Image 1 (cartoon, rainbow, N blue to C red):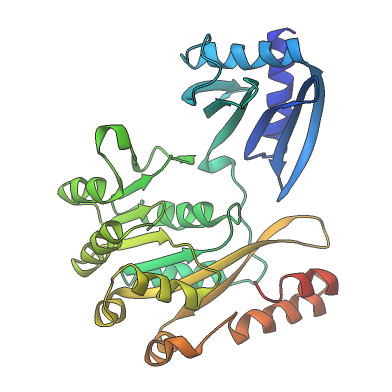
Image 2 (tube, helix red, strand yellow):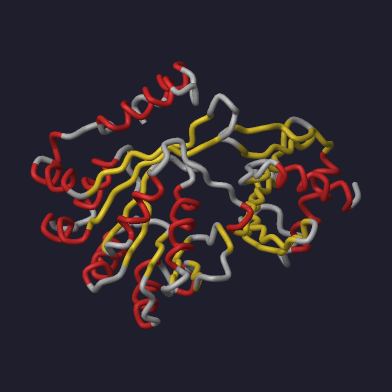
Length: 328
């Protein structure tokens, strides 16, 4: 199997704005598939020899140990696509039979990512919330576009302010930002990079994920000192974000002081078959009301349901689609 064939596979993935390419052992050969538009698409079925050739080719290009087939390995490389150079993140591991698999993550430059909105004005609302500084928190399932939303907002702010991102790993390349990547082997995790980042005096922080108490505490400290801190938090809705921050040890009075807005989002298929984000936003007066009785709130906000109904009425989504996203 020649390099030209490997290039064709990558080109198809990139044209479909795939997030990942999977090279996985299946039966006596390998299956190539990619993740795009919230679904897995089979790209090709190839024999075992071709599959191993493809894995070894990318391992060699990424300076990974070609002879190691069992232990997990991570690597990266730059790939020229037409006149654009793109970063690829590679991960390999061998299964219990010694069969190796590889996943290639595509890191797109921000200017290649389209990001429209289903309800006009929602991005502007988020933009205004970001101008107030403090914590602007995002949640939603994996692949729902949270990072892209934060990057789009941060790009607007970067015209007049210094933006620093801290991610694990960096998912989007943007030359206007200072981009830091978590490195556990070097003891550079989220909270340590935040501590280092504060010395660089950026106005805006973008944190890939608040996942532990140390990071939550540092994010709140940064927000209290006048920074805008945008970050993702694992939760099923906007109310769950606040509850999660409480679980991470942040006291209520600090949350009330620092949170300027919370956004839950999903990518929804329109009648034109486009994947477009819909946001459920909690801000300003609503935040104060929810803070007083946080445990009595569950599910989505009333506005989420109203927006779905409006989208059906306007012919932008089907009733079936609206029903499937009713609970978030």
